[in-house]
Length: 105
Image (cartoon, rainbow, N blue to C red; front, top):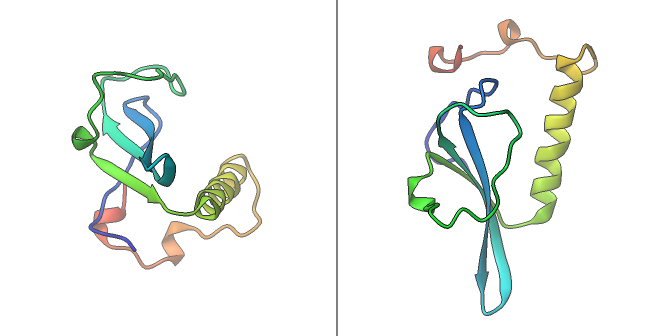
């Protein structure tokens, strides 16, 4: 299910991505990837266990109830990566897709 719309624009190092695990009775129930706009930093840098981090400050959440959903997301991102590196397999260009102006960069 998708709730609301968000546009995440990557490439300048100003999005903090924080993995969060929700546990109940010592059992992992679901995981989240929280996105928060920050000051630019080195792309890919990661600070573990930031005690001052608050999930309520996140701008966008990706919530995963099944690890298979994470695998599917990673697979699609890897396909996109290959496309951006020059692969023409399965390329769907923006001009052949109906889009709302809201989603054009």
